[in-house]
Image 1 (spheres, rainbow, N blue to C red):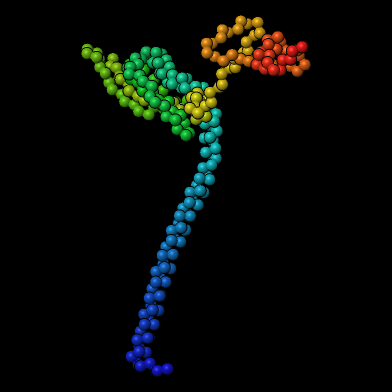
Image 2 (tube, rainbow, N blue to C red):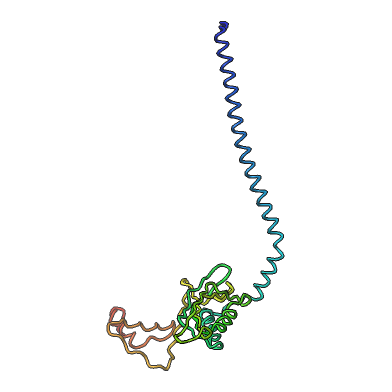
Length: 247
């Protein structure tokens, strides 16, 4: 084997050092990236653990709220009762307080996962004190009635004093119901019940007239051992005269 020259030895040493440094650099970069990924996962898991611990402390309060909802949240028997509830309640309270109801309209219901919300909007006009009393009756968290929007506008007639001025109250109210309410809609793929079978025609009922062109039903054949009728005997003789023997 030919010995290496000094220049070749220096080149091999230089290449070895360069490869060693390159491998260390690549390994350090990979190790650093792996540590960053693990650190992010550790932070995420610690944050999630703190959230779970905090949610665990709220469990008694959540159970209390759930019990309150089960005891007080009502369900509607049918959609008609749900739609007329707010209209009936608002008109009744307005009559008691001598308020005028205008632009009343039932809004589309919101069928959410946890609550079914019937909505209603209207304008009530009357004295300030009566309108304030109406708003306090309308907003009732215990009855699950919530005023989502409210706008008050003073309306003063000509020649009237400030004390006699009326107010126009424009509002939108929601009534929350249990999502387990009775559904009255019939599904589209519901099976249609089969029609009742027609009762058999009594034996003493008059026979239906024959339909022109329809085939005449054949008479039932006589059971074995019964004497043949004269009509069948004559037909047999005409169809097979050889079978008839002369006495």
